[in-house]
Structure formats: C-alpha cells, structure tokens
Image (cartoon, rainbow, N blue to C red; front, side, top):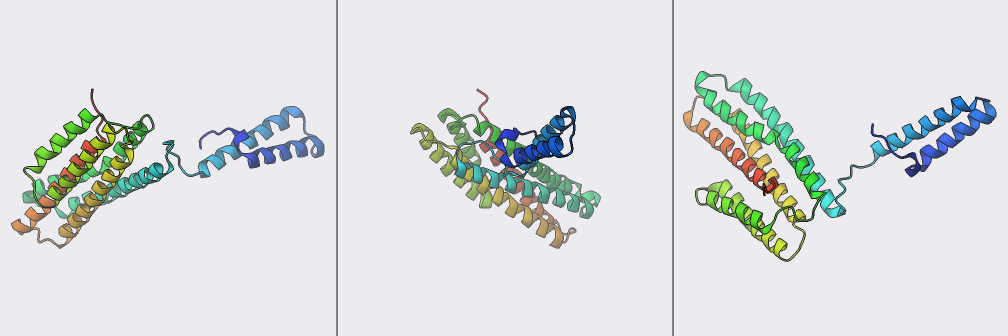
Length: 243
C-alpha cells in the first residue's frame, strides 16, 4: 500500500481527530500514546483511500489517459491469452516432427507476453513530452513499413497498409505542431486487437487441426508467423529514437 498525504483525505483526518479527542478526554490516555496512534490512523486511512482511487497516468489529457489505459488492459489480456496458448501448444505438439512448429508457436506467444511492459515504458515516455518521435524518426519507421509491405500479403499487408496511413498522419501532425500521442495509441489498439484475433485463430486451429496433416500444420505455422509480424509492428510503434 502506497503512502499518501493524509491532509488530502478529509475522512481519515476526521477519524484521526475523533480518535485523538476520545483518547485524551474519555480514555485519559497520555499524549505520548494517543498522538502517534492518531497519526497512524490518519496515515493508514489516507493510504487506504489512495489505493481505492482509479489509477492515474498523469498525462494531463483525460481522453488520452482513458484510451491508453484501455490499451494497457488489452495488452495484459493478450499476454494472458498467449501464455495459455503456449501451454496448450506444449501439451499437444509433442511429436519430434512437430518441434519446429512448437518452437514457432512458442516464439510468437513469447513476443505477445512481452507487450505489457513495452506499453508501460511507452506510458512513461508519454508523461514526458507531447510528441514522442521527430519527423525523422517517423519517416524512418515509414520506410521500414514500406519495405515490409513490398513482400507482404493477406492480413499482414492490410495491417501494414494501415500503419503506412497512420505514420503518414503522424508525420503531418508533427509538422503542424500537433500532439501525436492519441494517434499512436489508436494505432497500437488496432494492432493489439488484430493480434488477439490471430491468437484466437491459432488456438482454434491448434484444437481442430489434424496434427499429422502437413498442410494443416503449415497453416498453423503461418498464423504464428503473422502474430510475430504484428508484434514487430508493435515494437516499431513503441520504439524510441536512439538519437
């Protein structure tokens, strides 16, 4: 439980004052006993009230804060689901010929479980500045996405097309002096939700696939590759300029 200034919480202060009056006037306790006791009541009560308050990210933008907290929750749920899928894959893929597939699924799941701390790191950086990345950083990211786009297809291509549009929009925001944080959070939310869809498809495929059928296992491998690519795109969005 975190410490809190009791002067910011009237109810614990009131209870402490009542305890002080009762201790001195009614219980006739000496000051050296009742004063520390009343102080402890105030501190404990303030700490309790603080722990009951909604978490605050100190972004000075209520809408952005709500959206980022939603993204953090999405990331945590995705990580939990990935942990479950990893364990399930370990139980089902036990044949020696399935070890490569198992490793692919495990790697994709491991990448997904790394997402919550990455979002936490991004949150800390967002508390420090309005625009996390310069135009040069965003253009570098855009070039990387366009390079991947040239060799992608299907759902991955759709996601990369979206990222291209998002990065171009962010470049425009930076050039016009606007805050890019909300656009970045929206892009992250889309990526995480799409990752969750691929993760669910992987679980469904794992449960329904004839694991002796090479073609079906290749489809599962393809889904795990898609999930890994999505996590690479998340890394791109949360990366910080090394300059």
